[in-house]
Length: 145
Image (cartoon, rainbow, N blue to C red):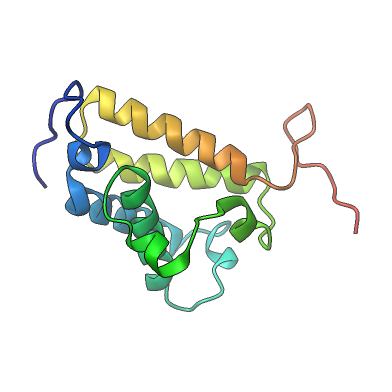
């Protein structure tokens, strides 16, 4: 993996700063290696092979951080919340997603600034995808149904 660039260069996109396609490929592959054996997240993926999901996340993250627009070109606007509504995402799933992503991040070469920037995004995104609210004690509330 290439050495991370300076956090301060305003001319460099975050995509390039993180290391471009090589970085996002490595990060997402490390994440999905964990998902493949996870008892909470793996059942949410209907496909026997996680390759398509891995590709979608990689393309989305590359585009989000200023890289190629392949995700948009192939799938249209991300509409992340809508695309995740069919999955029951409670606090446990949210936290597990974050744990696996944090572990995947730990395998990457990141400056402190890059790590903080990426982590803040992932935390925000994970909370936004949660569609089963927690009660004040931190436990998922039952759904009406």
